Image 1: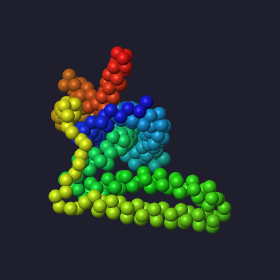
Image 2: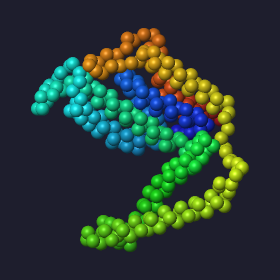
Image 3: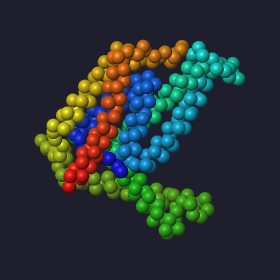
Length: 297
């Protein structure tokens, strides 16, 4: 079951969550923080996209974790815990392997959160947030993000049509395949130009660029959004204060060492966990509330 309740929240709430989570995922290198970020991002992507997200995420996460764990020690020889000496004479250290795994986990978690961002933050939300600040840039980015999936969908249509006619790139000799590929490229180029002209005419007909033109928006910041926004700000600020106070610091070189765990430090980890799983809590709460209503019918 795909869950989209968090997507119905105000764009400011969605954007605040992703800015805080992605920013903290890049900033925090403590293994526990990395694990929280990766698991929460992976879980929410599965809730948004269904079972196919499991396969998609594992296809890039596992190879990335393995590759960076192997590549980093080949170039980074810092650390005092020597496991073995490479043929070049450089030491293979436990700290360099651990740092490679940490860096790979950080990248994988950021990618997971960005995949969720692409599902939640639609083009109309992006334009709503940045339309008045950078109107031209926000429009270009929105059109670009919208054009890519449309181009891929149209390419599939054209490719299937050409395949039915026996003019696919997989049919015939190399020369014929190249000819068929150029034909598909020509069709897609023509379609792209026509689509651009139609978009420009539509924008002109709707008064784009006229001074004083207002913009319609369906988004309103209600009480539910204010509560969620306040909760995220509180958790985010509390977590960042703990980070800058050194409560969740972790050192990889020359030896691995974490900041001494305290009650305040534990509360920072809990705060970061709650921040990362905010959408998951919202989705589970709404499902539970819906089932409760159904049971009363």
